[in-house]
Length: 112
Length: 118
Image: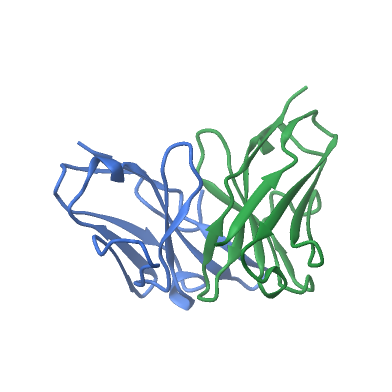
């Protein structure tokens, strides 16, 4: 069971918009920045969003991020078949017993 | 540009040892914290360990604490993961990654497959 909770799967048609949620707690999302990663089949993960809502250079503005309280959301507009991948949120977790990085369980995006 | 190249993976018997390496280039290795992350078959990304830029701080996830050790050689721009007493459930692709300046993991290597099997 992951510390950050994501839906296992989402789907939408090409050209449409999809959102992926990431729910955490005051020890992680509520206390620090969230980042998002995309992992295409058979490849390494890549950074999509950092500091809740910022895009690294080279990431198109079809990808957006937001955070409110202990939850975060990744939005993807203008869906393309090439967007089919697994998407993960991640953040530092500062509990009383340990500091660790945590990922969500991942969300598989299907572009129908 | 930033390059991270993992090596040392392969087939290892349960209870034996294996050391992964991550050779880096394209950035000032000694200024950055580093992570190990793995992806097991059919599972999601699992963060394993972090080491600060100077090696003085390490964090581990509970499932590998006491069995795996993260280390680095700043003179050789290389990160290591010593895997002792591996179990079948440690079978995964292992990635090294840089700790970004914005509380994120940013650059990733291509991964090294470790299979624990007798």
